[in-house]
Amino acid sequence: MDAGTHKTRIFDSSASSLDRAAAILRDGGLVAFPTETVYGLGGDATDARAVAAIYEAKNRPQFNPLIAHFPDMDSAAKHVGFPPLAERLAEHFWPGALTLVLKRNPASAICDLACAGLDTLAVRVPAHAVARDLLRRTGRPVVAPSANPSGRLSPTSASHVIDVLDGRIDAVIDAGPCSIGVESTILAVTEDAVRILRPGGIPAEEISEAAGLEIAAAGDSGIIEAPGMMSSHYAPDCALRLNATQPLQGEIFLGFGEADHGPYSLSKKGDLREAAANLFSLLREIERTGASTIAVAPIPEQGLGRAINDRLRRAAAPRERG
Ligand code: TXA
Ligand code: MG
Image 1 (cartoon, rainbow, N blue to C red):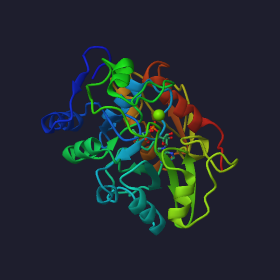
Image 2 (image 1 turned 180 degrees about the vertical axis):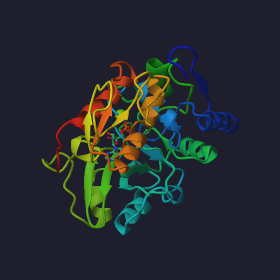
Image 3 (image 1 turned 60 degrees about the horizontal axis):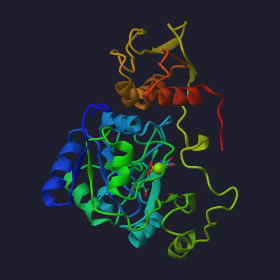
Image 4 (image 1 turned 30 degrees about the horizontal axis):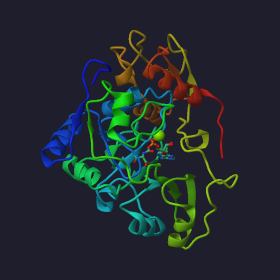
């Protein structure tokens, strides 16, 4: 929806309300819903425009990758691979306040913007009955960051959501306060190692015990990689030249609005939501042509343009590894 033009609807958690909320999600709308940790701002993970609208509603200056929510492990397993260790953790803690960052299945229909271009995906099966019922009725993976504007506290009731997002999202489902009240614990899991990316609802000790591995508690230096920070960011294999008005010899041009040379444009209409929705997939597509440099048209530094420029500047900067 367009910010400020509509009123946000408040739904109860009856079956008919959840059906209406699921229909809004399938149509590309935004619905805030309760989980046992915090209220999430949900959108269809396979719809890049819906995902762009989430960043816009949150006024996020950066495209952090988002968590995809599923009603059960089988539906999550269509989108990511579960090494045995991850399977053990999922069986032990799901449904619950645990998010697993796993290798994304290349056949997954989840859009590149949802994972900010990474080849991993964060997945979670929440324990809240209303959340799982909504996810089942929606029948699609739903990405949901906490339902607050960037820089504000995470909401643990529907009225918190309304206080900060009224008029910016289509609906909120009111099912009372969240029982846990802090976000999920995020783990990166590979074949033989578990790393805590964000401490949360499930303590490190419980995870160590279930995994049968020593996992350093969150807070030990060098262990936590702030989620979404540099080293986990997607960077294209080619160089980027920003604020370009036309391509130089050998460059491939990535246009925006009237700056348009060649087959690639983030949005010919100059629409920032469309540009955000296209950003990561177009960068990947151009990268695959073997281009050595992408010349990118100027993007206005406003609204979603700030997040687009943030990502372009990082991608253009000399590589940070490790
Ligand atoms: O409890 C929760 O986890 C809530 C509820 C709504 O489920 N959601 C939530 O989402 O806290 P959000 O977007 O506020 O935080 C997600 C965090 C971000 O810091 C992001 O950088 C990290 O997860 N993340 C997501 N995908 C990632 C990935 N592929 N690799 C590394 N970090 C990732
Ligand atoms: Mg948050």
